[in-house]
Image 1 (tube, helix red, strand yellow):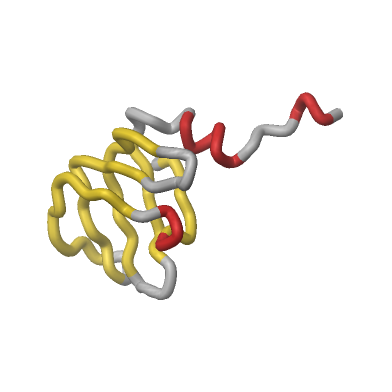
Image 2 (cartoon, rainbow, N blue to C red; image 1 turned 90 degrees about the vertical axis):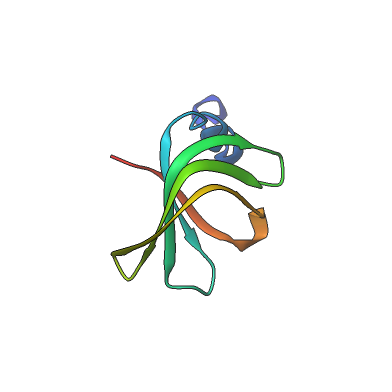
Length: 78
């Protein structure tokens, strides 16, 4: 049943133009915002981005670009 498998990169591409939460490696920080673009290395471009540290809202960052190897998780916001 190989046809039922969705590759992680395809799942992230399907999240473009939606609100996501990104957890960073080795940091207590999460970023929430709208996913604008993603490439094959999972580098992501977000806008309307806010920073959360230990579940407390921090700064409004606006537009950010995050290198894929610094990302722990990417999840859609519910």
